[in-house]
Image 1 (spheres, one colour):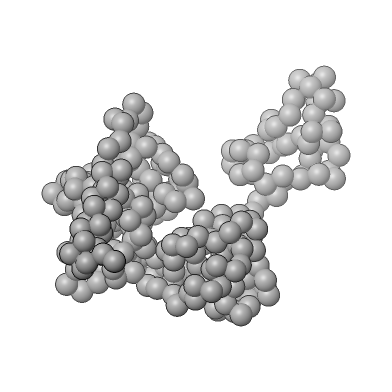
Image 2 (tube, helix red, strand yellow):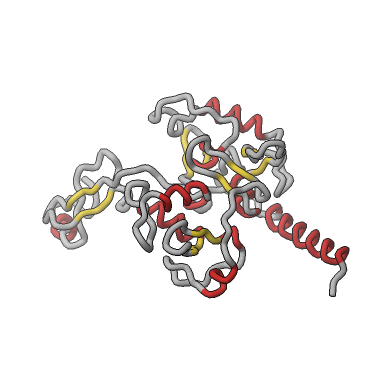
Length: 275
């Protein structure tokens, strides 16, 4: 049996090893986010990587930064966040040290009263911090984040309904439904589901609950985008369609050809895609 002193030493070593994994990264060779100093990364975790006028930033870093105002219209700057304000926020963050990687540039602060922890968004996610994408867009460190009472028995016996893989033993990697006998899912699976279904179609995968389920997912840090899908029908046959985002069509593209009609379009010089 380990003594209390030995147990504390093991915990200290595990924590320091985790911090080393976060800090020991290769220098970036491409553009990085001004507010977290990281490369584009996973859009499900960091949001869209926005670039304009030699300025690069993750969308989630924009909306979660503690002191960044949104003073412009949605069509100005980066979704209403003005370049000059982003640079001022980066300057402020340059004086804040991330409690995870111990480096400067931490633009996000835990919103729990009396907590002084600051962190980069990616570092916080790796340590178990949580950010909410509604209301005041608050963020919390791993000690003050909202929690759920997930029973270990459910985790050990069940698999995620969305991917059919075993659930993680780490509670922060799972999320529990408030309905359907409190079914447990992987956080990553629910987040991908939320991004594909969006606000108007997001519901419980089990019972189609559209009230308690979305509210609890928002409380637990799931980003549910508010968008309506724009569907375009094939200009030749009219029987097939695509979403603009799925086929990477620009807003000024008026025509699209499906795979079946694309060969005939090539003969006329149109080709597959937009005209």
